[in-house]
Length: 272
Image (cartoon, rainbow, N blue to C red; front, side, top):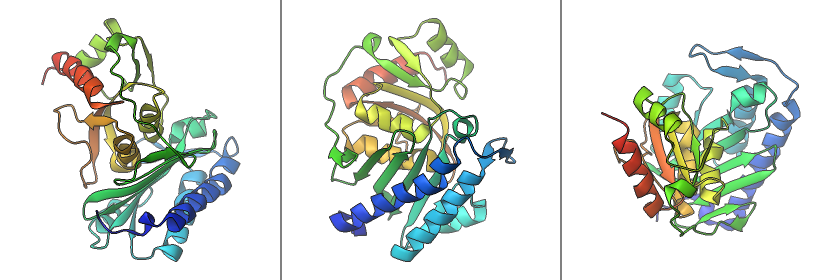
């Protein structure tokens, strides 16, 4: 197992408590209170994004200065330099679901992961609106509000599954097939990638599909799902997590047998 500070339960609790406190102060207090602006890529930016990242970076540097920070609101050069750090780096999305946040929709989160030697070793996703903290450490399981998440071992048929699917970033043939003849019983899309992964890990949905998500969107949620016994791949069946700045598609499910059913259906309806 890769050595990191958070195999120690006291350090782990300190990290979790610190992130929750900062999120309540810098994100939740600004909900429905601030405006927004557009970034160069067309996505939204609020004061909560910048202040959450700034205060989180201060907190992490005070307690674990050996790790660099890849923050969504940093520029590309800063992100790449942090990703290349020999000691490891944090991967932070200060507000995942900014569009929801900016429009008064209470579905957004703070996502933080720690990567050492190109391996994710710890991850947190905090939902301030519901006061739910999902967390995981490599090889030590996943949890919700400090209680272990049980593995979901049943393999329901696809027609009984709830699908969490983001249509906007899918190919036209695949999106069309899902819309005209969905293989699942019902579909949802809430707008926070990090929470999507966690809700699959918890069983609030059974299958998941997203065509284009950034490293800071999925890193912590990916680890949490893995540690909860879930499974995932990209549209080609390859590993979702790679230690690169860039966007990745994701196919996921509550367990490996369900993923195989879901992946097979997708590949049959998504011409390469």
